[in-house]
Length: 90
Image (tube, rainbow, N blue to C red; front, side):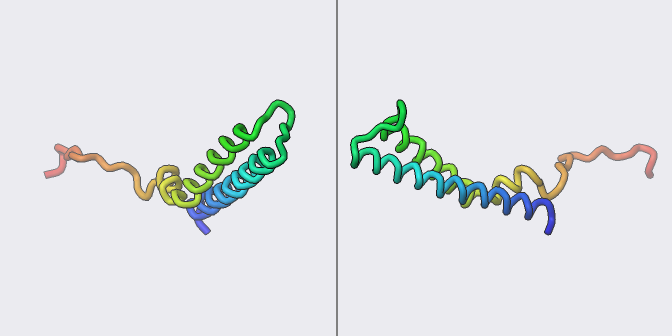
């Protein structure tokens, strides 16, 4: 397994964890609204916002892992548009 493939796997696992964590926050927000409870100074809308953000980030990491790995590990080094010619070679 190459480093690029291993990094892609890690990105997808982090995305899955964020996705599941987001649903846990959404479930907590629903529970708080059903029972009219507050956890400390947090209200249900705080949990809703955090849940939506985690789900969106998780989906991005799951679906866009290839973009992240291609950005991190480019396939080839950047090439010059006009390579300079050596004057000594004839």
